[in-house]
Length: 389
Image (tube, rainbow, N blue to C red; front, side, top):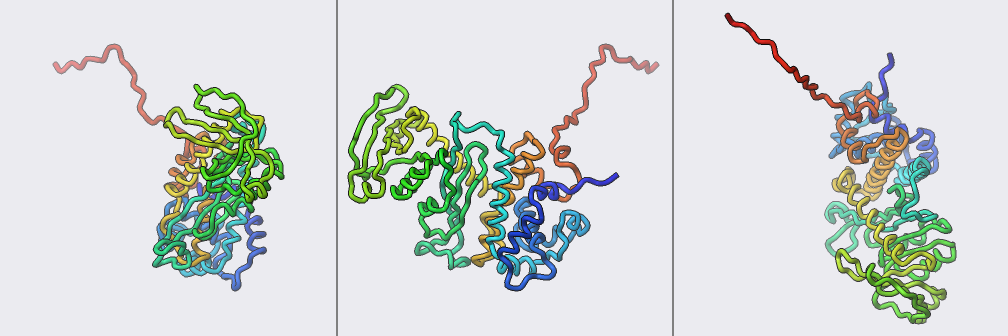
């Protein structure tokens, strides 16, 4: 009887080794390590993410303690602190970024049967960025303010399945609005973002590509009202208007008409003003689309709480990016395992179990099965009496 693969190997099954080899061929190392292949490096970094290893010494100790199991997981090289440190510094971070792109597309295909968000007839995406703070003393290359250092992770999240379809990583001083020039644009899809992305020239390019956007209007934007539509004030709506920009710069950047919706949240009392190029949807549905943007904030919180994005194994420019892209790949591999094996558990539950059982040789479905080990109580109507006489 053959033993099943390790739990970690079942998670890594979401990536084919040839896909990693193609990415490595596109971005080769200046001097490749003879004892630590690209797959060994990638698997070790993902292992650190899934098992909460705090240091390179921790990765080395865990994998070398069970060399036979490490071999069965596909790690055939020598995983040492020196080899990992050299690979983090010299193996191009774009290898990990390209692998993340492959995993994003695979996770999207496996989630194709998930219903569209809010009953829309097109995909709904949320675009936002999060700042990953670093120590200025250890990461001087990431300085973006007088005493602060950070990198910025930009993500385009599919709100139907909570899977990123695009991600980019830059220094903290780079404004997030620039990512609007990089994201993939699907005609007919909806893109929701906060008012930090209010760049009329970039939004007009989305409009010309046939995509719809929902964002918030800044208070200093100059416009005039072309038409107004009646609204249901009892639902929180205050106005639904067609506007045009009348500032010279704004009119040049976005010459077409826009839709302005004013809404007061009944729960919090906050007044919000939305801006969109979609004129067919109900005004309340536009407000609900913007409300769904909060899912990307929850995604960022999940990444920072459950993966290694606080303490870094390397202080160099390349090593930090390798670790962050490894975290994204680990998240996607868990998503792919959940979809591929039809696991009903949440990502958090799967990650907690994988973190403690990565080297066990047991099927993941069996490991996650809810087994009731309580002893069944049998009600005996009349117990036997013991006669001591």
